[in-house]
Image 1 (cartoon, rainbow, N blue to C red):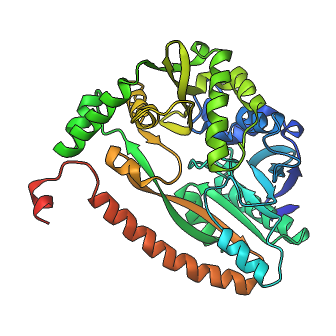
Image 2 (cartoon, rainbow, N blue to C red):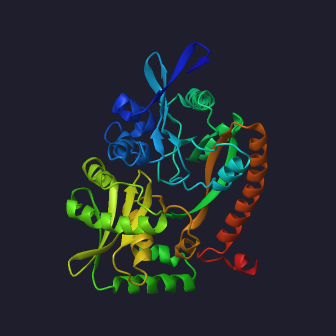
Image 3 (tube, rainbow, N blue to C red):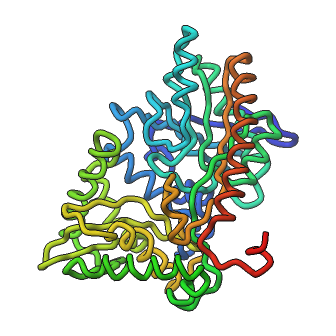
Length: 399
């Protein structure tokens, strides 16, 4: 596939394994800010994270996530890439299109396989069109055209770019893709010096409730620690795997990640991980897994083998806030859904995706649906923000 741009020819190749591209070439596009050893803005699009998914068998044959990585080159030099997958289902995406699939198939078509530019199992906003600095416009154009051309050549129903940045959503819409607005709940660090500073920004009732929840959680009879880097030991992953399996079985039927993923992540990414471990009588009974970006803590998984009041809130939300404040992070993204996060200081935030659908009539119908959905999401964000836990000014109270 080629993109004939003025003065140069861009070639877009489809790779079935990251082994077909050098790590430094991928990361020069995915996280150029980290090439000198600094922390990546987004750990999830880094070579080592995506390669861990692939090498562990979490994606690949039999998973419904078949790698088809896109790499755009100029004169043999990669200038842009994208984590593209052929999908055999809609699981592990968190931008829900099940109704679209049902409608397509009721009309006699085959919605699957489809194409997805995404980080598997990871509802975290980040760049999806990964470009070298200065190549943003040509890179996004080449990757988008390449993905659509691949879909057409293989008679695939659709292409979906999920949890992209707002800038990418705007650029994609200008290229004719359908733009979708959804929401999550994020905690924002307003320059707090410690957790008590954060509590002071809340209404009295919410502040008291959080203090009670933290006290109940801490009273479970054990200790709670957040571990990073070399403090994380193999036995911690043994425990967390048990927690993760329990949560996966209840939420998804079976876990998305394999046991080997955590072993590989320990070797290649433990400095990018904050692992909360709750122990009682020397036995880990619950835990929460977070990944550390340059400015954001990304909450990913939680699990337990014992139920204790409020321990979930403490391990997933309050420990994350503590970590973000102490490490000067700007935000905590606590994953998909969950209006219960609102009372705990996490406010609604828009998330973005882009969609291309091969059938013109179906695409027009989805476009109308997305317009109505956007209006509803905008209204939800406005209402939920107004009902947030933060103190109101006298003027706001009167309103």
